[in-house]
Length: 490
Length: 103
Image (cartoon, each protein chain N blue to C red):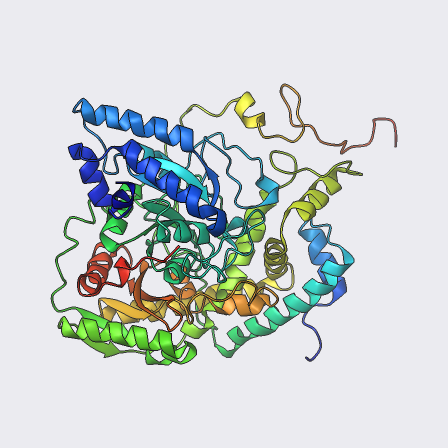
């Protein structure tokens, strides 16, 4: 029975629970059995809430038995990245500085999941403060790729992607500042969406790059992704960057998910295929052929500023990070150094002792880019280039409904392969970063496998607040392929 | 590599601004790594941006105003719950000012 439950999608599980065919408590037990069996070797979770989750599942089962109305995710076991604040358990950001931090409030997305009657089963590993592309920067735990345990799951939402791929939850939330949902989704063979900047409230998401951060779902298929997005979207008066209903109406994005787009026009950027591995390029080209068979028109475009995105990003994101992470001061919460000589050492030693190398490196780079004498040359220059990059997207969406490219230039790389050279690690974000700089939505879905049986991700990018269209385009591909149905042998 | 973009002395200065008590090993390592990254970001200078406005964020909104009304807040107990050192009402930190009369 439990293995059958794990084969269900979120929608199927929810519907079965609502009909009384499956109990939420059975689904939760199945997921914990899976975690107990496999997470020792995968390491996706930083914390799990077995007792509380079972209790909650039984409450939801009780509501259903009494015929009471329940939410859109009633009884479905969900995991969340551990940079989203929860009043239960700890919120660590995979950092030693927050190892014992217990949030006094819930992030808005957590409140929304709970209001939809989801069961939050645990919190997943990440690169410390979401800074990284492999989850190797976690200060607390190592996570491996369920498809090949000698490889990284991607990052920074590596724990969430690995947990979904290994069916240790039915869906998960991640956050994406430069590709941190899409790239691990690509490496782990799941669907990962970065919504439009402003679509989802970031209240209670521990800030990294505030003009770029966005929360989104990781799921086994596109329709589940649409369902999760519908639950977490919407204006929040606690986040002034979340937009109102007029600009971005919220409705059930999964309702029309199976309606294919007529007269679909897809843009491809041939110059961008040059930097990717041939197996990745071939899988993406095959995906384009699938769309051609579905009567899509393919047009070739140029995005002349795309190649400058990494350089602009690592100045803008680090500048914002240096400011955001100033709050970790050893005074209000988190680690404090023992026996500081003076109050300056409370800051400087606490921070130095508890931040990992990548976090320090980014704080240093951002502080430098904002410092007197360098601000114009680095930070301001990067913001101007950001405008040019966004211009490339605006021009593209005047000609096409979406842009298609790889999510990552490679499939999952080996653990330790890129840790010695930070710049090499940054360059692995080449296809995802421009999307964050431009605020537009993008999804990664599995579109093939390389010779090592590692998933390849297809990235589809749409215009601002066009998530419904984006998801329908992604679903067209899914309806004609079965890559999303393959699961790793654990 | 040509002359480093950022030397150890500059790294020390940035570390001070960042409130990071880096070790000498870290300072040397960051001088190398940050120089390589700064070398890379130089590529932005290939673009002429003389007539381009900076883009700080992508939303078509500027100010968000709301009514100024009192709402429940966390309260002292919850606010202090995670403090490394505290008493009943305050965060405790080492002395910042000299004793009066000590000047």
